[in-house]
Amino acid sequence: MRGREGAPHALTAGLTAKYHSPFASVAMKIALSQVPPEGLQVSYAAGPELFADAGDGVVAQGSVPVAARVDTEGSGLRVKGSAEAVLELPCARCLNVFPAAFITRFDVLFTPIALDVDADEIELGERDMAVCHLEGDVVDLDGLVREQVLLELPMAPLCDEGCRGLCPRCGADLNLGECGCPPQGDPRLAALKKLLEG
Image 1 (tube, rainbow, N blue to C red):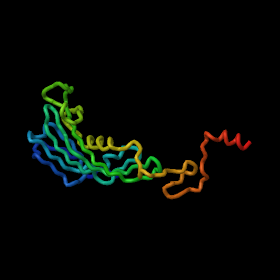
Image 2: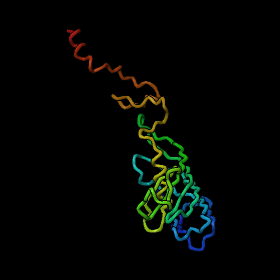
Image 3: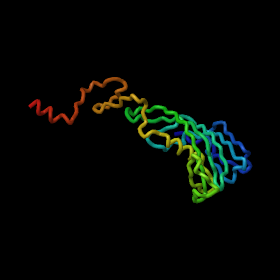
């Protein structure tokens, strides 16, 4: 896997209300102290190496465009946005690798305090958002994107709903045609077959 292109990027204290990277691979971290009162509009591309250790043969095809709105909320940060990723996944039936596109939307409140659902400062009852603990005062936006995309992965990805899988005897890909193996009978009827033949 190719390494990350360019040095890790951190937002600086003098940042204006908007940040944009023209989809060059960067590592994105946002500090609570660096978000102005009017918030930030963030647009960048996470590198494909974001999924390098995702396991199960998962590989990203190209960069992952991310667009997010970051606002201070109480003593924490609210991050709301979306990410688009094309991942190569192994089919659970035939094991062939196929591309799958994901558009992930997220709305997460990072709070450095023990969340009190009754507190006036943070009202969650009418909002559809997740709540995460803020470690220090920095949000790892790359980590958030990775987590949200991986949560979208199906338990058993299929290259096609009609995938025929592999022959259980010779391992041939049945999507390419019949393999020539004789039909396999029901093993539960083997005893009855022997009885009838005897």
